[in-house]
Length: 248
Image (cartoon, rainbow, N blue to C red; front, side, top):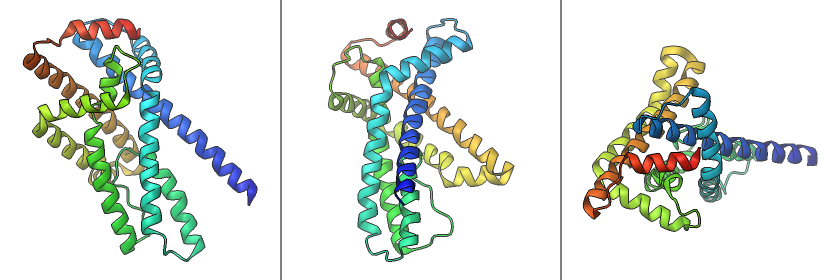
C-alpha cells in the first residue's frame, strides 16, 4: 500500500510539473507568434517556439501553477462536500483518482462515464459554474503578466487589471467564453468523436484550446487599445516590439 501511495504521489507530481511547463510554454509561443506577426517581425518556426517557450516558462510558470493549485483546492473542497457520504471504499478511491486529474483540463465540463448519481450531478454543476466564472475573471491575466514590465508587481494588481479590461468589452468576453465552452466542452468533444473517433477528438480539443488562447490574446490587444483611447496612453506595435525585445 505504501509503495502504491509513493508511486501515485510521484506520478502526480511529475504530471503537475509537465502540465505547468507545457501550458506555460504554449501561452508563451502563442504570444510570441501573434505579437511578432502584429509588429511584422520575421521569425522562423524554431525561433518562435524556442523564444516563446522560454518566455512563457520564465514569465508564466507561477501563474499557471497558482491557477492549477486554485482549481485543485476548489475541487478538493467540493469533493469533501458532495462525496462525504460515499461508503463504498472502492468507489471512493475511483472518485479520488479522477478528481485529482480534473484540474489538468481547461474545461470544467468533463463528466465521468458510467457514474450517474445525484451527488455527482450536483458536483459537476457547482464545479462548472464556479470554474467558468473564475476563468472569465482571469482570462486575460496571462497576457497582463507577460506584458508587465514590473516583475515585482503583485498578483492581485494583475488580476484587477485583467478584470478591468474584461469590463471594457463585457459582451465580447461573454460571447468568446460561450463559444469556448461549446467547442472545448462536451458538445465539441462529442461532435469531434462522431467525425473522427477518440484520437481525432483529442487532437481537436488541443487545437481548440490553443485557438482560444489566441482569441483571448486578440481580445486583450483590443481592450488595451480601448483603454488607451480612454486614458490617453496609446497602445500599439511599439509596446509589443518592446515586450518582444525583452523576451527574446
